[in-house]
Length: 209
Image (cartoon, rainbow, N blue to C red; front, side, top):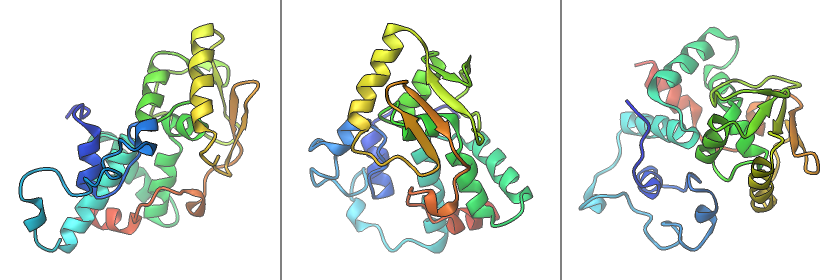
């Protein structure tokens, strides 16, 4: 199954909340939710009955994958790895996905959305420990440094995105040097440092079926 290329606003409406998939548009009056279109897409959606427990688990799993842009095969790999680690499986899963290269780039403010972060990484605008890395799913570890390719085009792209991102709070587990256009992973994120509104227990229950 390939990556979904259709209207992103429909994805947010289906999940019932803004997932911030379109960068600046999600914070503008053009957001579907701010225009009153906070109902699921499709005909007669207001007639749908109460969601079952299985339905809640499915929706939470879909919301997690769509928020972070993770496809099914990669998601199953994360689940298996989280199950093998010590501790709470749900928290392990969230921490693993939060450590993705594209997610770290987004949190640092180098991209307006996770999908744009993936594009910047694949096109070689960013560096990892001063080396090229074009794999958005690569997992970051403590001490890793994310920088910007030393070209005028790359630096302008990131500077423009940083101006937009100043309103976003930088996570405690990351630090950023605006002048150097560089970010660092200070520590691995803990569950209480992950602000994405996900009920991970529902995801674990769905995956265990």
